[in-house]
Every structure is written in C-alpha cells, then in structure tokens.
Length: 198
Image (cartoon, rainbow, N blue to C red; front, side, top):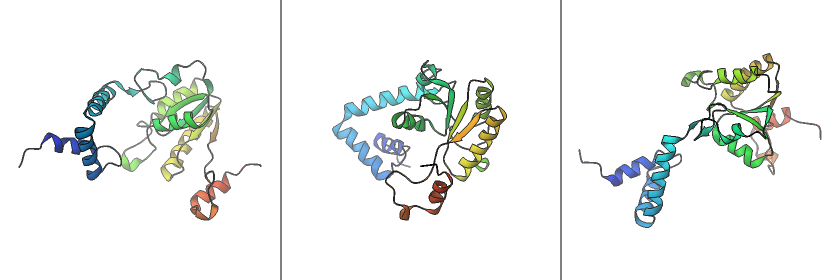
C-alpha cells in the first residue's frame, strides 16, 4: 500500500467539514498551499486552539471558552425568559435577528431513541434544575417542527408545566415574502394552526 502523502492527508482532513466533498477539499487544499499559506497557518493555529479550548457553557450548554458564556454572565439579561434551542448556532441566529433579551438552554440535538439520543444526552435533567430554581416565568421552545423535534418539545413542555412555568413555542409557517402556492402541505398546516389575530 502506498504511503499517504501530506497533501492527500490534508485533502482527506478537509472533507470532515459539512458540504465539503472530495473536489471541494482538493480546491481548498490547493488554494491554501499555492495562494494563501499564511491564511492556512493561521487557520490551523486557530483551529487547534478552538478544538482544545472551546467546550460547553456550564449554565446553558452553548459553546464557550469560559465555564460560563458571555450571555449567561451578563447581568442585563432577563432571567424570567428561557429560550430552548437545539444547537449553539441557533443562539447566534436569534441574537442576530431579534431583540430577545432572555436566557438560553442548548439541547445539542433532539430526542431520537433509534440514534441513542435520550433525555440525558440533551441535558434535560439540567433544564429541570433551572426550572425548579423558580426564576423562569416563560419557557420559549425554538425547536424544529420535525417528528423528533415535536416529541422533544412535548417532553420539555410537560416538565415546564409541572414546574408552573408558562410554555410558548415560536411560530412556524409561511416565510416572509413566501408564496402560498409553493409551500408544502406541512408548512401550510403549521401556518394555519399557529395563526394569530391581525
């Protein structure tokens, strides 16, 4: 078996990125080696630092270099509002697109027994602890409307209701500027079910 060259190892390593197939990995590798070695070295250094220093916030489970992320450490956030999301990227999306000033809890996925993802993997015991602290007035479910997402939302809603917390769910349905004729049936049904007074 021929020895694997550094170039082939680099190309193979780049394929771990989402959406990067063999051809894209090859283009990235050649670009870095031929046109931007300094950028490649910087990328490698920052990537190594990130992999060793970034973990989960002890409070909300988002990604953070510190034990407590900046959002959890901020005294200006409303402790009475708790938004539950599936992934850390969704925290960033909400922060960039809305004026939400509450707290977060990141699940890291959704319930999927077939994939071995249960309540423990999602940190639902830690979420229950937060609800029992008595600070949360409203729990906002910002979870995908898939079968697994709906099951996850149901389990969390039952727990929150048992703790005396009001549960809401973000609206799903017609996107801004969307044409009704192009929507799938499920999206249109969700839009109708979640309609509000105009």
